[in-house]
Amino acid sequence: MRRTLFAAIGILLVLTSRQLPAAEQLTIYTVNYPLQYFAQRIAGEHANVIFPAPAQVDPAFWMPDKQAIRGYQEADLVLLNGAGYAKWVKKVSLSRMRQVDTSASFAEGYIAVQDTVTRSHGPAGEHAHTGSAFTTWLDFHQAAQQAESVMQALAKKQPANKAAFESNFAALRKDLMALDLEMQKVVAGRPGQPMLVSHPVYQYLARRYLLHLEAVQWKPETVPEDDEWQRLRYVTEDFPAQWMIWEKQPLSETVTHLDSMGIDVLVFDPCAGRPEQGDFLSVMQQNIQNLKKAWQE
Image (cartoon, rainbow, N blue to C red; front, side, top):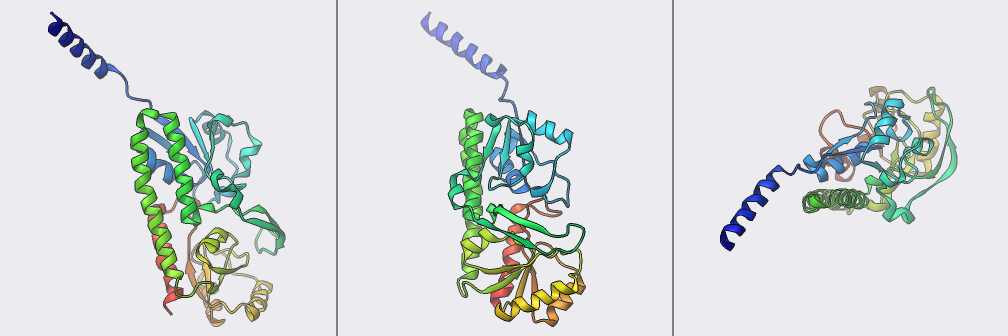
């Protein structure tokens, strides 16, 4: 009788377990593409990860419309970059319980940006850079820390899938630390090599990998004005850089003018927004290949 009873109970448990619904898929909203990439790799099929900013818009200064804000408000998790990134978050009502500041673990290491005004061509005119540098993920060690905070938030939301999240994070961390090691190898020959950058967004890259950078405020889609070229000449008198790093490929006229000054161009895309081709990992791998040119001469 006991054997029959235990067998019946076992069959009942099996049948019941088959009828239990799987954990519902999480809805996650992020404020930039790197966090979307990290979250999707870690969550896999267990989450729908949404980054609603349109292409060709800098997510750091984007203001979501009402529909996008509603999506953030209804999400199970909202992944924030921290360091003052996406200031619109403070202007709307979002549940604090659902927000995850992914860079909180290294907030004491934020790089302060001084109160400066840089002349900029185009419709934006002059504007100030203040607060903290916010492209935290360009230090790949920090990127791994941000990814870990994503994993922890997911595990808290779905404890049953914790093992899967941890396994996926381990694979992602391995990729990010491979980028970190490759960057260190690239610059090891000449640490502190002077380089110009077209936009002041590479502070964490410079700190982690011992780059010596001087920033201007130029846009790849427009040719700098005469006063900007004159300013650059003054800069290079005391800062003998032979390379300028750009977020995107600049216009050929700009490249030609820089070449006449003995300055070559390379692209290191911060990948804050969704890339036209590839993903975060492939973009960063290409960035490193581009950067190698400056150390191979």
